[in-house]
Image (cartoon, rainbow over all chains, first blue to last red; front, side, top):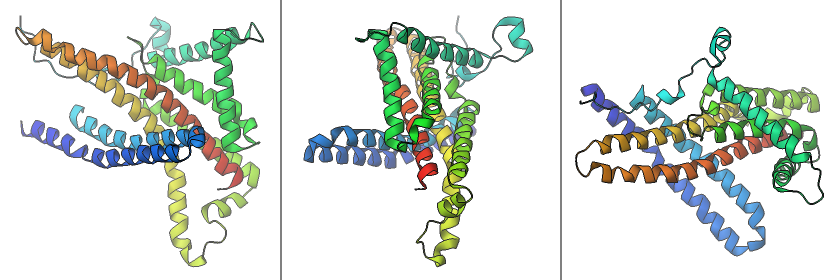
Length: 74
Length: 252
């Protein structure tokens, strides 16, 4: 039973990294909104960059999530 | 009859089995290979039947084919520059291979071939090998000195800059493959976990089935989110390939 408990704890600790990712994604979209508000004509160019930044940041979250899955299910 | 304690078998859906009967078993043709063939055939069918009418005012299928073509073409030209036209077929193939893998995986009973690191890793390695060959052909061995030690950097920083640049260059295929594979695995594991919640809750006495509607609703929303992720990851894979090609052609 201790192993199961340790697995649950380990998976929980592994996803602490998501806090940083949350800050990062929030930062990306707040900058995206403020830059579009300042210059609405730049929307098409800035939006693609924002989505790219979102995908790159989200990958970090998925690395952490993958570690949690590995701990839980294998 | 009380079944055994239900457990969440989240990774069982990624197990590979030989498909196509005896013939498939003898050459280890798994269901992943089957879906790769289906994905390729669907892409070719979209382009062939979409472009066959050659109408000036395009129909629905022709619009889809033209839209996809223009989207990738614009991406190549805007990211790589004029030289990007040469790499358009490569990027187009990669984009559609990844997109079809992600989208086919969302169908019930289908298999997501992009959820295996062997496949995304092979794609990413191919990208990095192609990028390196392009860089050497465009710039010769000048590429290595210029790329890993940019002109104008103080000589004293060389022991610091060169390892950093080499590591960042070599970590590209790792991050490229793990991003796609982790996205797909995480999405499908979430489906499985919430579906198992439904089964577990439905067996919980009187109000169990009522509460069990909750995970089903979440799963419906997740399918929509995964559709977005499927297209977004194919886009990210293609655009990162374009960015790497830009670095190879123009050296930063």
